[in-house]
Image (tube, rainbow, N blue to C red; front, top):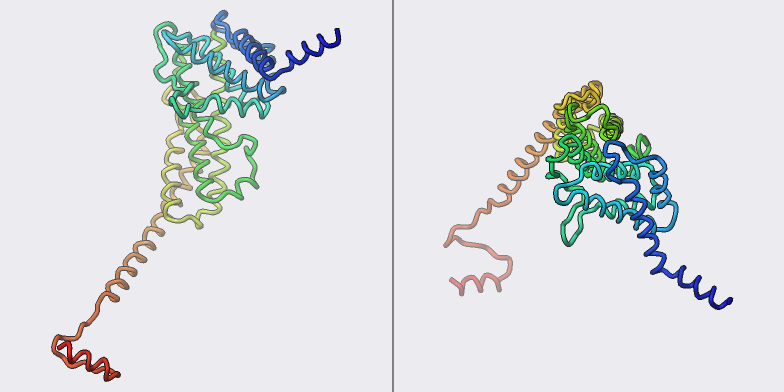
Length: 332
């Protein structure tokens, strides 16, 4: 009897069986959380808690959940599309990336990355069908694009860390400012309020998540604008030019074309970016003039060194050595 129990335990605890069980459990949890009916209600809290629990286990369980969720999103996006299921998947992905354990977030990033061989991207839903439910489908397209941009952001744990920003080199600081400006620009493209029926709490959950992302982006833009203002005179020509372009993008985020009050950046943040852009343009002008002077000086030096006055043919040339003089005479 003891031998049979040992064999049964060995079978259940073998890696292959554990992996299969994790995959099956993950698929069941995802199906329960993203069922089509009710189509206007976001995933229930207890279903979300069940998904978050996969991040507190092994890496295999976290990977199984990430795979199951992305597979569910692909299936909902195929054919005529199931907007309710797809939007529930996107809402869950956004929440899990924000609240999940590190191991779960890591596996979700891997699952959502573009496949290196096939080039497939689970979030490439710009052509999601609009026929069945225009409102929900519009929010599927928007939420997928916003999530795709969010994946390019730096580590969220550094949000508002002044010491972290002070330690960044200029190119990295400008790059992060550009990344958050991209999030703000993506949030401005939210579907109009007419695509958010009051009774559709699923769509309004997507609205609230997008608003949170815009607020986070705005806070990080403001912090990086302040930090860049303190080190503006240290910029080179290339960095100054890049900063001017990024700040112009920030200035364009003042209003939302969809007339959502939450989608546009705060006027004070935009004003600070505009003032910094004017100062950056002055730095860019100075660096351009300095580089032009250096180029002219280098050209002048090169031209002077190239002027070699060769002796006229037939002129006498004196050599300090009689051997060289004889050699020249014989050559003549």
